[in-house]
Amino acid sequence: MLKLYGTPPTRVLRVIWLLNELGLEYEQVPVYLMKGEHHQPDFLALNLAAKVPVLVDGDQVITESSAIQLYLAEKYPQAGFIPSTVEERAQMYRWIFFLVTEIEQPLWRIARHTFVYPDEKRIPQDVDMARQECLEMLAVLEQHMKEREFVAGDRLSVADFNAAYTLDWANEEEMLGDAPRLRDYLKTMYARPTAPPTIAVAFAAMES
Image (cartoon, rainbow, N blue to C red; front, side, top):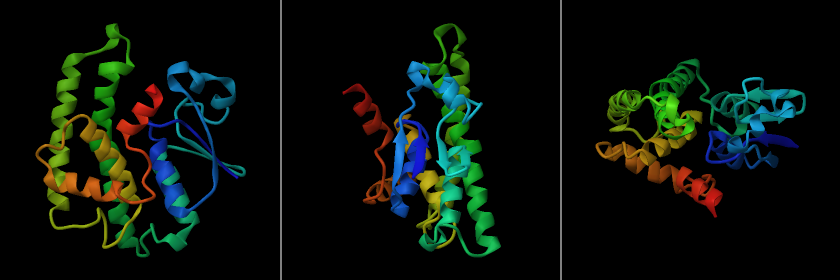
């Protein structure tokens, strides 16, 4: 049985989406960051970086949500979420790295300086800088998606499941106002029956 460590609304949602798409059974092991459970010795033995998600598949321990997505898609190729040619795979990797480095990182900076860090460590100016950087890169993705159905190639790939979570995060920060194509794409992806909860729904479940 696969074991997935982590609790929504974290990046564990990316992995849940792939697991749902692949129809795989798994055990979800909650790790509550606000309670400091990611610093417990048992969890640190799995990931010394003290971050979620972590996937345990037999003897394999995989960290980093995008890496886990790629691992699952490659292990179960029948779903077709990994392009067959090296050229198509290069484009998929290109956009996954773009999403993680150019869009997700400024979003994470905003989160750290608005509610993750204690008040004395927050830098309001970095929030403004990160927001501007993120908007600029969202504009790049908006242009890329203007005439496209999928992020890379002509069918669903790992890049799409990665993008959907990242764009949902950007949407929570009200950054998609000037990106109508990305808004439509986001709605289409979350209309899939295998879609995990949105970040907003996951936060609401935590508070209920």
